Image 1 (cartoon, protein in one colour):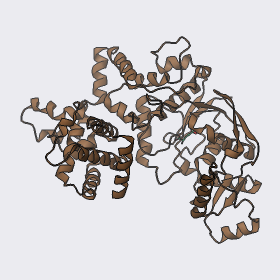
Image 2 (cartoon, protein in one colour):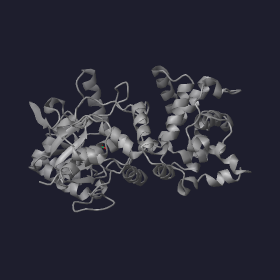
Image 3 (cartoon, protein in one colour):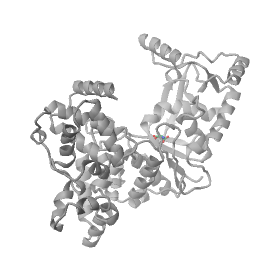
Length: 492
Ligand code: GLU
């Protein structure tokens, strides 16, 4: 058997360190077995997926050196590798499930489903579909479909007993069927959900081993039902541990930078990042901490993956990155610094801004310090303003983070429009509104134009600077966070 593994990111938002983590283990395992590593783009959530985000995934994984043998951009024998191009395949498979009775059409309205959920919650039951459309007469179903009545396709789930399955890392897992919902497999817009698409694709792409995050364990019973319904053998499944913040909560951008671009832009070497990720839930047979991906591949042993939640510790990553940097020869060091940022491509967006403000070349570096370097550490005193209080500054920064989070187009003009409309909605003069932003982003009150700076820095660095500025202003308690969320929602 040829070992075939895959990583299957959804192109929504910025490429995540979790994607690199999954790609690393899948790639290392496949290569250790002489197998193939596949990249599949899971873009069935049309509202949230974007071509820019897909491109960003390619760029980030290639930067990390995690290249793939088959994928949407390079093709392969099992394509298409982009789920939105496989709708016909899912439709055919959904029809098979409807014919065999493994799935059924459901016409319930959102209002009805909400009501059922509320009633279940008030009885303290696990919310799940109540089986309302299971017993519909097939003629009635056909007539309603012919009339064009909106419907979804749901999975039929046993009422009684337990689902048992083998996880390659965790042994037998038992989940009572009562806890498993009649999952929607095809949405009313005809798009499949993750659950149908992942099973169909893993089978048709001949994936032999699925290494994915532990958050999918609870979905496994649904997938098992689907494999059985299709009469397909199941790939081996290994649910890897989730990366965690130092407080052991799930790694989240609220507490740690999670965007791969943050690490790239900050000047982490990909080999250091991969080495660090290789230590997450894994140790080399000789327990050494410093190793390359090739060394990890040569010695890889799936049995050495542990399931305790590994903590993604920035201080340790910094130490490791410093080690890799110091191990470079002077020539390599200069090349790597140039690759990182000091090159024509990277400098060209800011060069025109700087040129018009420069009398002597010696004036250049002080203007771009915060764009190419870390910005200075801040204290609340840095934000002092004649009309804005500390609370005002926190609210402005908090709302700016929330607004920028959902901005798809990270270009200067789009950034300006988003911030301007937020300032208007908050009834704060733009001039005042920008003051804490300037300081949070650059550490200074006078800088190159702010919106060019935001565009240049990118979402990940901007987010982390705004967040650390909020901390410098005293931080936000849980209670205040809730209040800010409400106040933001009322504006947009
Ligand atoms: N699209 C899923 C995700 O983004 C993939 C999960 C899987 O590997 O099955 O996490």
